[in-house]
Length: 60
Image 1 (cartoon, rainbow, N blue to C red):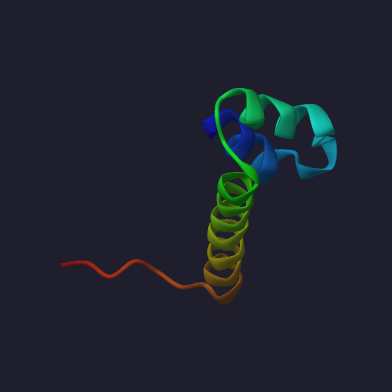
Image 2: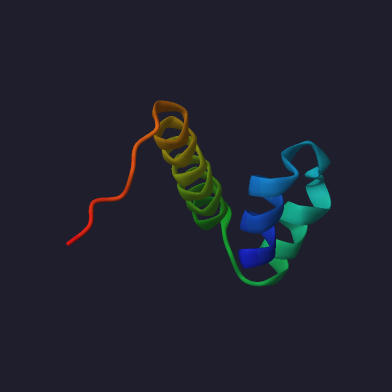
């Protein structure tokens, strides 16, 4: 799962059906694969928005 998420984040154009097959082989069903993809994409999106707007972390 983490290899899939890393590849989707760093090299999305290189994704292949084999990447999904490996997730299925690890026991993930279609819903689980969808959730992994959606959460990975969401965090990439939010991080790019924050970086693009110059958002800085709050200090406590």
